[in-house]
Image (cartoon, rainbow, N blue to C red; front, side, top):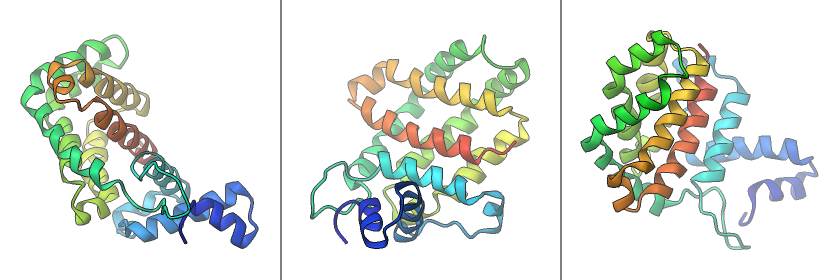
Length: 207
């Protein structure tokens, strides 16, 4: 049915809005064919998938409205724009310096040293995910990729969840201050991407 997924569920099945939102997340995950059944993902609860799906629906689908609009459709133009974020990899040292300056007073020394050692691993994982999301197969495997490329290495590094939250905030906010992102007019694309990735990682990170 065209129109708002949650509104359609509320109208058709006479459900409360909170319950309709939960069913809406199920329908969205099914429509997008996200991989959720891998054994590695079994530790995640329905609420974990719900919060991730809500973030994706809010930030990565088309923002237009109207009776002909389906809010289960990903914004293809946005996904294609994400490919341009690879320019951040050319400025990895600058990005690392800005992130570390912001984090030094905020996170545990152990986490800070681990970040200094493995920043390249984390930034390549995060940017690598972004530049490939326009491919259907990569989008469908988002949760397993986040787990294998980001969550598992962070767990091995012994990160506290609060330190991860500080890192993601610093990582997101440092990039738009760099000339390379401003000149390419990618600030909004970057922030739209990181809002979802940060929400998903913090939800999936059961340290």
